[in-house]
Image (tube, rainbow, N blue to C red; front, side, top):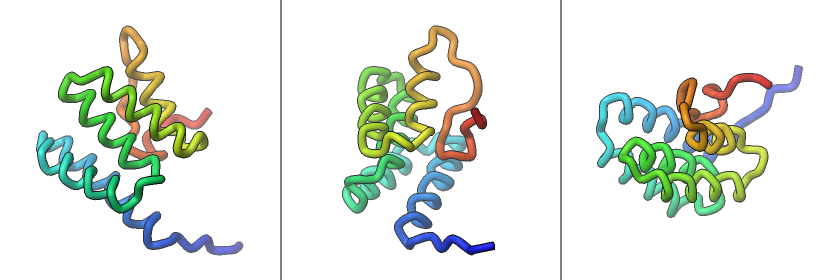
Length: 109
């Protein structure tokens, strides 16, 4: 079985997702925003920071801007399932299930 090596950027983005998840659970939104905006600057073409800022904005009640970031994440990488999952979840009149911080939060289809 061939081992798949992850790049430093992939590892850093995965770590970002896990850190933001923890900080959101602790309601540390300002720390989240700072980490995410730094990641957006460092990885402008990565979908993860846009998905994460969308989650943060949704939790703060800014639905319209959150949806723009989910769409941006999806546009950057149409195969990035968490962005599509969150868009569909937050467009629902009665959102069900958990928020998708990363792929591990998305149900297998």
